[in-house]
Length: 609
Ligand code: AGP
Image (cartoon, rainbow, N blue to C red):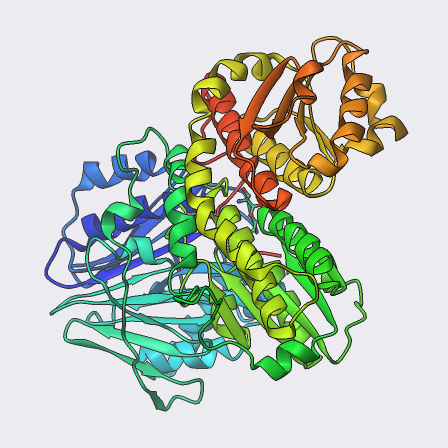
C-alpha cells in the first residue's frame, strides 16, 4: 500500500520521483516524502497529507538533483505526521531510507540502539531500520554491504531503498516479501514498488527477488544475492501500454475498469482455447496431478475471496470436487486440515497481499501443491506458487476491484472446465461451457448497456439507510461482491445474505425506504427467491431485481427489473449480474461525492497483515 520510487540519471531527479509517486497514488497513502542529494548532503522534504502538500514544498524550493528516492506512506507504526513520513535518516545523517512493509523486531532494535545512545525522531519501525543500516555503514563497508548485513538483522516483510552521502553515485535497495522493481534506462535507472510508476520511463524491468540487494548506478544495475555474491540480472519487457494505466477519458479509474470487462474477458481466454475448442494452460500441472487432486482449498481476501466462492460453486457442482474457501487472514491461524493430495489456490489481483502470502508460506511448509490466480506479473504470489495462471486483466488502478473479479471468475471457470476435460467428468458439457465462455464478452457488453437504467436507480439507493443484497446459489455469492462494492466506494451500510436467510434475522432490519438488490438469475431457485422478495416488499422495502431476459416471474414483484443475457449455464448469468451492481455502486458514490478511486481508509495493495 505504500509506494516506493527512485531515480538516478540526467533528469531532475526530484521531479522524476514526484511524477512516479503520482502514478502510485492509487495504492493509498497518507503522507509522502523525497530525499535527494544536493551539495554533498542528503536533503529531505516530507509532508503529511496528499501529494499536493509535498508538491507545495517541492515548488517552494525547486530543488535540482540527479539522484532521489521518494515514498508515499500508509501509516502503520505511528500516525500520519510529517515526522513519521519517510524518508528517515540514520543517527549520523549519513544515509536516508524509505521502506514498505513492517519490521517486526523494530522495538527490540530501537531499544538496543537507544541504549548505545541513538535518538529517534519518529515513532516508526523504519527509522529503527535506518539506524541499523547506519550502524553497519560506520564500519566503512560499501553501502550495499551495510544494507545486506542490516537486512540479516531485520525481521518482517519489507522492501527498502537507501542512499548515502558518502557514495553519491548509487541507490541501494533490498526486499523481503514486499515488491521492488528496477526500471532499466540508458544512462539512467529507476526504481519502484509497482510497474505503473515505471511505464512512462521504461519498459525494461528487473523484479528484485527476495533477499537480493540491487545496486543502481547511472551506467547500470547489479544484483547481489543474500550471501553478497553477484546474482544474474533477468530483465523482462512489460507489455502493458501506458494508456492502459491511465484513465482513458473516463472520469474515474473505477468506471473505466468496469467498462473494460468485455475486453478483459476476451484477453483472459486468449491462447487458452485451441481451435478444436479444447482448453489448455501453459506451464500447469500434469494431467496426472489434476486427476489425483482430492480437494481444493481456495485462499484469498476481499473481492478475490468472493471470486473464490464462485470457484467453489463450479468445482463442486461440475466436478463433485470438495472445495473450501478461506479468508487468508483466518487460514494461517485456523490450523487447517490439508490433505496430501489437495491443491491450494491463491487468488489475488495484486499478488502482494500480505495475508495471502503468509497463508501461501504455510502451504509451502506443509508441502501442499499451490496454484496462483494472479493479475500482476512478477508479483510475489505469482512467483511463489508452484504454478500460476495469470488473469491477464491489465493493471487495475481503482482501489475497488471490478475487472479483476470478473477475470478471476473467468479463470476459475476455465479451470473447472479444464479439469472436467482432463478428469473426463461425467455429465459435464465441456464444449457447451467453452461456447458460453466465448460468448461471455458479448454478454458482458449487453450487461454494461444497463448503465442507462442503473444510473437513475442510484438516487433511490443513495437515499436508503441500509441496502440489502440477496440471492440464492451463485447469485448469493455475487450478492456479497455487490455489497462490498457499495460499502467501499459509496460508504452505505449493507446487509448481504442468502435470500433464504433473511427470515432468520436480517428481515428485522427491513422497513419502509430500504432498498433490496435481488439476484434472481438462477431459474432453478427463482420461485423461492420471489417468495423472499415478497417478504421484503410486505414490510415496505423497494426491490431492484437482477434477472435474465426471459424471466416473467420476478417482474411481478420487483419495483425495478434489470435484465441480463440468458446463458445456457445459469452461473454465467449470475456472474454478469455483478456488472450492474458495480455500476450501481459507482453511480451512488458519484452522486454522494465520494472519492471513488481511493475510498477512505482503504488501500489497493494490502501488504500488511
Ligand atoms: C475490493 O474492492 C478490494 N480492493 C479488496 O477487497 C481486495 O480484493 C483484497 O484486498 C484482495 O486484494 P488482492 O486481490 O490484491 O489480493
